[in-house]
Amino acid sequence: MDFLTTILQEKEQEVKKLTPVQVQSVKKRPSFYQILREQPQKIHVIGEIKRASPSKGVINETADILEQAKSYQQAGVSGISVLTDPFFFKGSINDLAAVAQVVDVPLLCKDFIIAENQLERAKKAGASIVLLIVAALSTTRLKELFLAAQKLDLEVLVEVHDAAELQKAQRLGAKIIGVNNRNLKTFNVTLETSLALAQPEDERIYISESGFQTAEDVAKIKQSYHGILVGETLMRTTDPAEKIKELRVARK
Image 1 (spheres, rainbow, N blue to C red):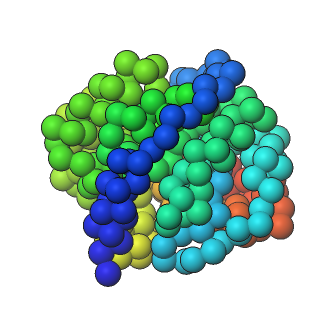
Image 2: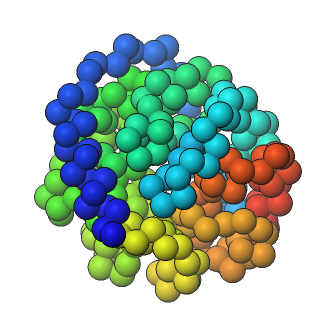
């Protein structure tokens, strides 16, 4: 099954029906990019609020997402990601807006963004970062949405899955690049993806996404990546703070 194609087909229908979001009292959040550039000693963690996924089904649908987000912040995450896709991940833009009111760290709107109105909704709901997935967009559309996000004063995490997509992200001028260890067509996960796409140190920030359960997992990629994005592991554990502490390994 090609999960990405299925998701994008549903997303096109969803975007046509999007209703306006009431503007929240948007907090001034620190720059995610600057946090990671200024503190390179340890791996940074983006903790994700993720109720379900297409491949795993329900992960933790009854979680108190506000308490979850607050526990992430107290444990020292450098950012929080909130899934806002309703159909496949059981999230909503209201989840993002609610989390935005209780935490002060950089906040990522995690969705399959294909249109400008999704960027505007994310901003109004309190996001300071948005996700753009290279595999989901044409080169032209990727650039249009990248520039539109910048005009809204949003940081952009550009997600890639292979060498060709990585080159696109670099040519785009992305300062924050995420390497997803999950194949979006099959949803299979392997840390080998991040190892294969490891880059020499430069001005960019690289995030390894998905597949992290232990400190040993993080140690495999720590020298070439500044941070990791962790969802399922944190949503399933009974002690997110302790798990975050474990995953924040020293980089060098």
